[in-house]
Image (tube, rainbow, N blue to C red; front, side, top):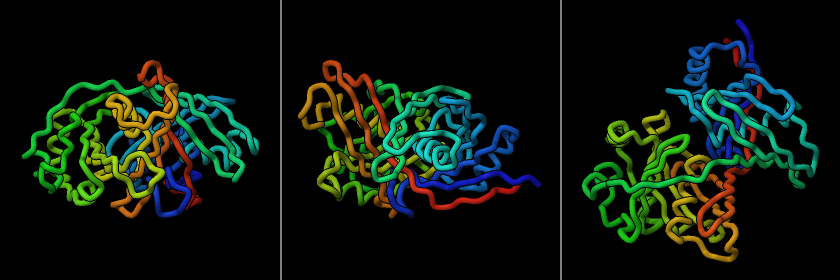
Length: 303
């Protein structure tokens, strides 16, 4: 039996019991793909990350849900980079910001890590802006899938679909009460998403719990192993681009936007996801998604 260094982080929260859990195995290079998937099922988090190699500013890793490998993972990246800094695998001095290159088996991304003045590690993942196409979700489907009447949908805005690392269906709702009233039928959502090649369904409202937030959302992803998602970076990339696309953000600066998204509240796992975008004639160009992660478990995993 071999032991592996292991941490569990809650990503997109500064507190325990909030955010989206992510397990980190730091010495995973000798594990097979089948072993990684088995460990991810045992951990049971929305994502478990396996560190393959760290060399200077390059980090090689793999992300798994309980049912599949991810091409990239926003909340897993927050846990991964925070853990690597805390354990001394990456050096980011107090008050410093450094960029690293994160490589998975499917893609690569730039990650910006800041050791803030409050001693927290802030992680921002650079992502390609989302590109949308029209999509269909009928009133009857909405009612069956989410347990609320179709009038909860905001008919002034379209339902749209986008594909990047994951595929997302974005569905606007009228109010915070409407989004709180949702009672998902995960089996039927799974069936619908499989049929239409959708990884996650995002419901959002422009009414928020906190006045400083931009948007309140819920995300459902039974097809990729997480029935409801407490927080997700790649999903909020899609949502933020949708908000820009439809002129739903207040305009204080024509050159950039910051979106603060509330997620996970209905699961009693409150999360805050920050998206920062540069704009070129109202088109997102330089897009970063992230926040902080909080360690809740540290020890060894035995295989």
